[in-house]
Length: 102
Image (cartoon, rainbow, N blue to C red; front, side, top):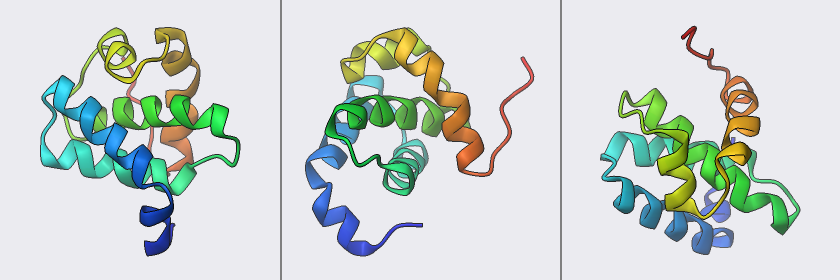
């Protein structure tokens, strides 16, 4: 869980999530999941926040049944596809969700 003050503290990152969601044409549910995932797992180190943001957008879209490719999310968030590939399952499991079996 996260506190309401976390939204204020990480406002710039949340704006980046919204911008990426706009580029990917994601709906409200996917955006909401992405924000919740990011705020619930935001790392202390700034250098890891962009990767967490990208994985959050990918998982948020996946959970909302608005799946986008890892490559598309990587391009929209400014990270490599490998970064998303390495982080999304852990993020999903941290949120208490199960990875799809495909």
